[in-house]
Length: 267
Image 1 (cartoon, rainbow, N blue to C red):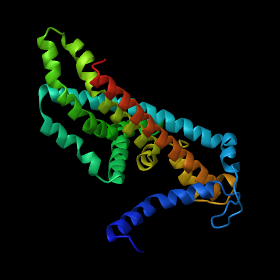
Image 2 (cartoon, one colour):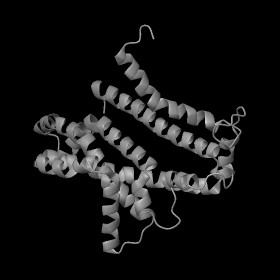
Image 3 (spheres, one colour):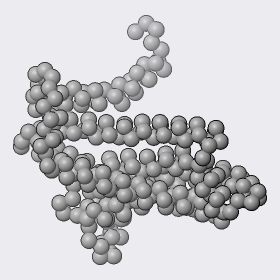
């Protein structure tokens, strides 16, 4: 095509590979036909069916509970690790512990966690899913929050030199300065947990379903009912994507406000 350079062509190809499946998924979720490739117009029927799908509602409750609990726990532990390293040193050792979970295959991590829990005799259920998500999300929070906490150390030291107690300096100086990074880590942990499939599959107990697990179970047997039709599963997936995007948007807005307050000198 005239005016399309090789670099632009590659860019368009990458963007198409990234977003075209989502567009097709959105269209399928609006298709009255339960079958792929059979277009019959537009409808919101599949979205309305979610209101009567008790199994989906239970899965959504489990997903939200697991995501919220693990995000709070991993944020507290990850931020605490960043504070401890900043104050006591040992950055190299802690980094060596925290970074491998970011690059190791998730299925290897999940299998190792399952073997560990089984060896301890821990019964699988919601609590083990929360433990599993927290154990691995700590690393993500640490990587995001620790640099911000370390950058705030000089200002905290200055506050303590001027007479602030360690607690007052932490609450009034360090935490406000590091708040955008901490919120970023929390949001990342929340989204990772809400959409996780592999670790949930390995650590859940009988009858425990999250939205990704529910999608997997129904997608393996498509067409058995309207609740396992392609169009209905597409609608659920679009809602899952919308929730993740909403969380990301909330993070952007919140961190922008926190950053604005920080630069204006407010706490």
